[in-house]
Each structure stands twice: as structure tokens, then as C-alpha cells.
Image: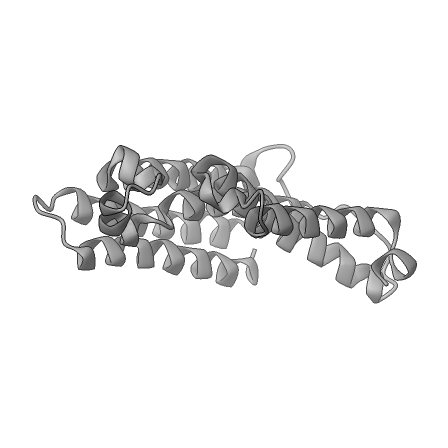
Length: 198
């Protein structure tokens, strides 16, 4: 149906999504067992395909011609970074069981605070880039400056505050880890709220 109703670009994006979803979860490959491969797939699907692909598929379904949109480009890029952060932190709440049963995850291999710190650093860099974008030649006039700067400044402050709280705890409890992971998702949803304004 997709091939007959949509352009070759949308069909290729659909095939890419179906292929990645299959190799992620269907035996014998089941790339979800390998942290690096699983993270890459999650980042591409949740970051790029769900933002760029769905946006342009809807436009095409409504018979609106393809026009490059810098906001959609930003959303797709930003959420790919964000999805990568989610992918590397998704196993944090399960770290005790992963260590006990010798399941290879980033959290089990490198430690909760190291992975949380890496994810926090990655998101902080993305927020700084987002705040700078409206002032760069490619972003001037394409974005609403106030929500891009103020919204992302608030997000980075929240991000750093939650990580500092986790980093300062001597004996981590599962509740502390879950609170940090929940904060990553809070930021994820906050970003989609910002998209209504930028």
C-alpha cells in the first residue's frame, strides 16, 4: 500500500523503519541484545524516522508538496540525539538485575553514574546547540528566538540539577535511578511542547 500511495522517498523511509524494527526484535538477529546496535536503531527510528518521515508522509497524504523545513530538520536532528540518550539510559532502572544475571548493558558495564553523566553531557551539548541555532546564518529567521533560548536554557538547568542530585548520592537506591530516568523522559516531552512554539 505504501509503495502505491506514496513517493519513492516515503516508501524507502517506510522500508527502513520496518527493517530496523525487524532486526531489533525478531530472531535470529534480535539486535536489542546488543547495547550499541540497539541504541543506534532506537536513535534512528525514534529520532529521525518518527519526526522527519512522519511529517513528510502526512504532508504528502494531504497533497502538500515537499518543501524543506528548517524546524523539521532541527526537530529530527535534536530528537535523534535525544533518542540516543534515551537508548543508553533505558537500562538504568534494571541495572541490578542485569548485573546479577550477567546481561550486557551500558549501565552494567560502565556504572549508573557514568552512563547518566554521559547522557547528561550529550543532552547539554544538544541544548547549547539549540540555543545558538537562531543566531547562526542557517537559523536566522527560521525560529522563534525566545522559546529556543529560554526553553532550552530551562531544560539544561533541569537536566544538570537532576544529574547533580544523582551524582551526589553515595549509596544509590533504585528509586534514585528511576527518578533520573524519569527526568530524561520529562525533558523529552517538554521538548515536544517547545516545538509548538519554535
